[in-house]
Image (cartoon, rainbow, N blue to C red):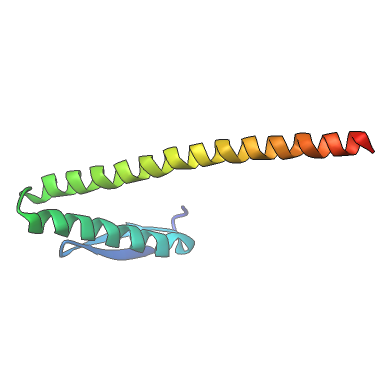
Length: 99
């Protein structure tokens, strides 16, 4: 980011945060902030966790856990895709060798 980086204003649990963010990343940052806000409000409204710091940590931990699950799933899918591509390559090579 350059020194001319614009700021985006985000509202999370009623508090405004101004974050420096490149223009091409602002939409993703806004969606991320909205997801965090939803998670934090759910935890606050459940009454099981009190205090904004604890709510923020737990909501962030939940989102980080979801991200890790998706990364693991992506790794497994990539591995399966590579295996399928390898089998297809072998079949194509076999067909070409037989001609």
